[in-house]
Length: 139
Image 1 (cartoon, helix red, strand yellow):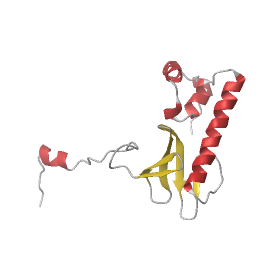
Image 2 (image 1 turned 180 degrees about the vertical axis):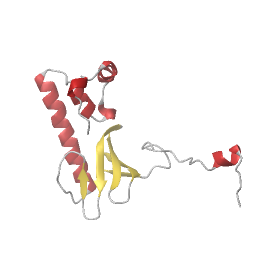
Image 3 (image 1 turned 90 degrees about the vertical axis):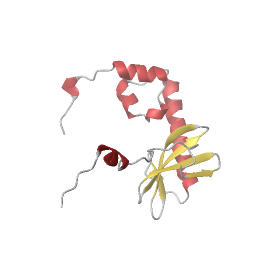
C-alpha cells in the first residue's frame, strides 16, 4: 500500500532538536568543575564535550571508556578537569608564542585555529584570503 504525506505531515517529521546547545540552554547537558563548563555535544564512545572557561570556548575534550583526552595532545587523563587543564595550558602557550613573535599568524595558521577563538580582524583576513591553487593537492 502506498500512502502520500501532506507537506504539513512531512514538516512535522523534521527534527526540532537544537545542535550545539549553548552552556546556558536549559536543555544542554552541562558539567561544571573547577571553573570549567563541559557541554555535551554528541557521541557515545568517545563522548564529545565543548570546554568553556569564563564564557569562552577553549576547545573540545573526549570521554572514552577508560580515560579522557583533549584535542591537542596525546595524553590520557583520568579526570575531565585534567584534560581541560591540559587543553587550557596548551591554548595559553599558543597565545604566548604567537604574541611573543610580534607577527600575526599566516592565513594557513588561522585556518587551523578553533573558529570560536578567531578575532574579528582574523575573520576579515580569512574572508579576503585566496589560497594559491598551485599548492593544492587532490587527495
